[in-house]
Length: 284
Image (cartoon, rainbow, N blue to C red; front, side):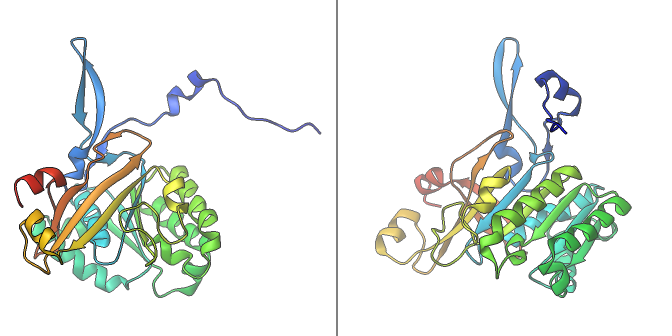
């Protein structure tokens, strides 16, 4: 029996092509993704207003750079706008997520009652079956997405689903990527770095498996001021921390590729301040 090959003429894909617009994160990242539109014969760059709709974005960085905080802020903002968010917690038990999101809501001035109503949690941190069996986890996620009409997904972290089998990282990440595309989700996957990996790169546990497969990567980093030269450069005292964020790449839309300085506020929110070059010129 002859094999059946599937192919499309480009025009046949028009009806199923996703619209290009932003899904807000509640941070300056919303202005750092952009699209090009034509106005009066001129091409104009316009902020997208968030991460691209239906994008699967990787957020990576060394420990204590704010990865989970960014993911939680995205979830809280989306839920406050009335969109359903599925939050898969792999590292920390779900009751800690509740406490953290309640604090986020207060810090951002959001209605926590609405956030409680619109965030659905799958707690894989306490279930070996969900962490070790991708198919079982995806079955659980699919049920939640269908029943609760979810449009956004956060997995914190995707690394926890292959932490003892990094050789399978590419296969596991691909399965979840395809799953999220099938269910038409805008998603953030948090990934952890190993100590030997460059802190400023998109590489994480499992190598570049996540970065190569997903639609884009956001890299968070931190620098501890420990030399007189750095004291002079940043106008910060010894022991201070400079945190940076950078969109390493995004295949779906244009983006600002500069390194930006950000702060984690005392209330645990992400505040992106300025491009690193401008920050240094203004000495903080």
